[in-house]
Image (cartoon, rainbow, N blue to C red; front, side):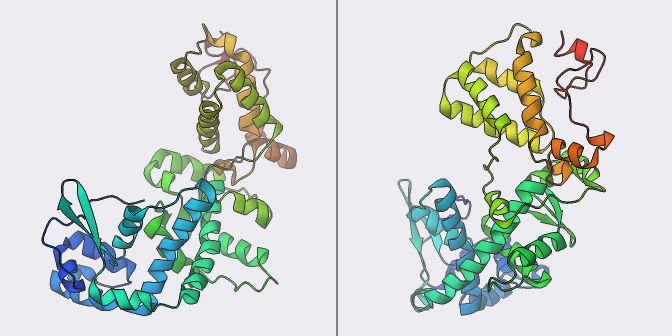
Length: 365
């Protein structure tokens, strides 16, 4: 979640302004964004230090940022069993100007909370912090789930879904303004997502331009697959794979040839990730298997594996289909653009592995 790029190699200071003055302008500008300071590009370093010292000591700003960090800690613990150690906690708080990390030599570091903040933090109303954290947790998990299920999605679809699924529960409706504020806080401690004012773009597609274009083009004209709240929020875990017969069949086959549960789990996550982005090819899997000592003399020997992968891919919820599986689209729309690949492929047909070659010159050899 964090790194040691902002470690201080100078004499330890205990005042907030002195510590802020130690930091780079780049760090101060990042911090200013988290504390909603506008027009930082016009400010000199001392101006930034002065206004940040004021904002960091403001209880409301402090609660908002602390709650965002604590939400991420809870998320990591709940889904992955990760308990943050003292250094991770200190690094997290250093991202919001609450602690500062000093190099004290011999490979050791020391975390310092400025004197002005010690009493402020001690006197924070933890009920208030927990209320903000609870709200963040619900909204953030919708953001995570939508990113994992759709890759690209419209802000208003998430807001409408949130409000519809939580209607009559006593949960406060989500407004456009609150969503954008929560998205801003989400980006502090999670993989940053893109936002153009209308669409939210998951972190993977922010760096994969060609895949982004492919997904955006493929989504045109398709409705969103929106499961019920319980199922939807399962996708807030990036490693969640919906259990299906096709998953079980592929898993069982891989266990037979690899015979190592942890490796097969990793393979299934990798296969699933490629399928979600509609970029899976059999060559990728065969290369991974060969590294594990599982070698096919020719692709014709891998027909059973190929058939299992096709069925799994056709029943995987894909970004390009706005969360629908290819099988779902075929059943509901009978649209020729979304026809499920049949495992009985003609020799002159495109190979279903995704290589772009004819079947007879690829997996049909």
